[in-house]
Length: 228
Length: 233
Image 1 (cartoon, each protein chain N blue to C red):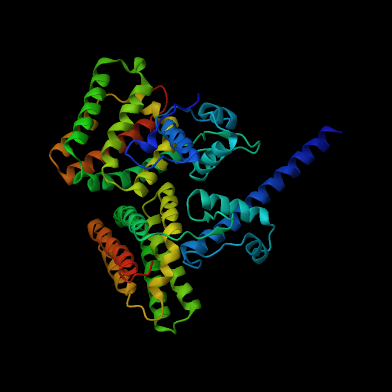
Image 2 (cartoon, rainbow over the protein chains, first blue to last red):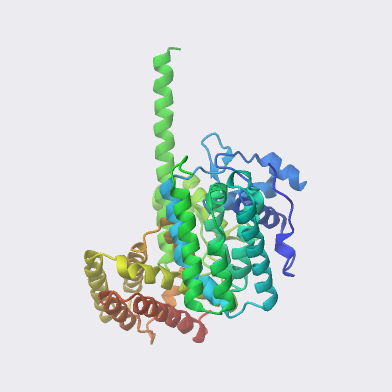
């Protein structure tokens, strides 16, 4: 599945990114949102084709993702989405649980009311999804997009490109496995706790809410198949 | 061609691939360590051939490692295609440093409850070795020895947080600002990192997560603002 073309780099009025940068950002977003499955091939030509470019900028973008551990090159030189072991996924979620509460706290003082409103909308949509649709029938790609938007609406307010890059590097590694979490989640209360702590402007509650949401994700991923 | 011969050559090509891979890893480790310990200053050219010759390898593994470092912005390709250690602007340095402070103080907070007693005594001996180093004469060799011990000290704490993915990101941060660290230890420096290390150790011994996090934060913030305020960029 080719990634959708998204002008991610320019959405905050930043200067227009170079072609490899644009491809990097698009593939990154697609990986974070679970558009690619573990083991899926990412043929250079397909990527280049979907952006209407030569293979050169696509190669540059993909090699950055390889260096970040988001993609891997097989001995046959094919580029694929890695299939992480359970231990590896738990290790990344542990990193998320350590870093993300702190960036959320940094963001808290800078969050504008329209950003909090968008978080509220994401939480409302996620709550509706948890209530109305049976787990087997959930639109998991919609869930993954809402889930990502909720967290990144907060993290982007921290205004640190380096921190954002670090957190994205965790998300792009978990992204291909993320639909499992969406399929197993049974309530939106974790999301509601995040929203409440934002509205209460409480550092301690926000830290706790982000951390326990990530720990819940970690537990859902760990459940053996067929226990639902 | 017999099946036996086929499987033998398959086996041998497997061996060759493994050695080639581990050679790249060895070269890559060595380059990363040099950057993180401040042995390659900002603006330093990175001549592939000389590095390959110094390491006694062909140019291939060096090129592979350099490509990886360029991908994470630890090295850059100049318009004339030469490789060099990036020179940061003040605001870039400040931005990366504040991310580094946040990530490492978060890792330290987590480490407080988990670090083993033997790691704590190792921290103590690294600290003593650093004390001995600054008492000795100021020399390039001593400076590098200090930075090597310092890196080991910090990473020993962060490793106790128990996430390899987190360690890798911390390495990326050190790769980007490490080239500036030697500035803390120039002959006329007034930087007193050892006092901070003393506080970190005592916070760790108290197993108080808040205190450990704050002590690491103040060490890193102090170093970053020393570099910035002395116009060392």
